[in-house]
Amino acid sequence: MTGRSADAARWVELAEVDNVRDLGGLPVRGGGATRRGVLFRASTVQEATPADVEVLLDGLGLRTLVDLRGPRESAREGHGLLERTGLSRVNLPVRQERGVAADAVPDVSGSRLADFYLAMLAGSGPSVLAAARIVADRERHAVLFHCAVGKDRTGLLAAVLLDAVGVPADAIAEDYALSASRTARIGERLARLPSYGRLPAVEHGLMSADPAVMHRFLETLRTGSGGGAGWLLRQGLTEAELQDLRAALVEP
Image 1: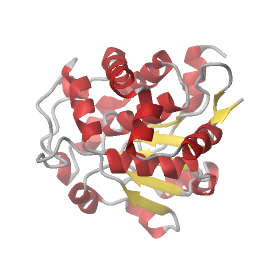
Image 2: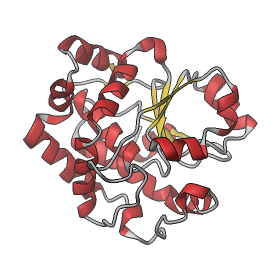
Image 3: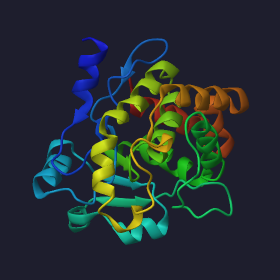
Image 4: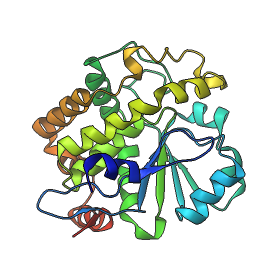
């Protein structure tokens, strides 16, 4: 399967959720690939239709929903019809640096996005660690994690987890860049929702998904913290938990 057709197979097409894809099928250094049907990334799921909910629960086997939005943002926007299901919902905010509101829109664009991601990572250790532990627990599968656009906070968590289990930087950056094909649709949706009136236009650099940004983020993560695995271990993940994470996400 070519790279383009493999990417197409990972998309989950829903009527009212714009940016859902399976993080399975990505190559892993040393051989193998990430498991399909285990971990999904998404934009906000609050407008999911009854048919969308059926796909998520019955089609994907979703058990756990990890919400990376800020507490106030999450409380205002909620999860729509998914709140009426038995789905386990966990709010693990990915925040900007200390002293900045969790749902503030940053004044960054282009290459500065990588610095923004690093600042969010520095302010979100407990949340990212907790998310890694959820993903490592097979009883919680399948897991879907999301923010609003499904690109920045979601992209940060995806990058840390995928790097920790050995997915090459090129594959992580290519997955990150796939969100660019959905930002126009996402922007139209978010413009209708109360929390996102200050979200910039699609043309603004904050809405971009340039793979070079993700490459820079990963390079700094590896240089400064030993990559996703080293960073998680510094946050308190044990070696045994790291092995559980790899076993959960990697298919030899």
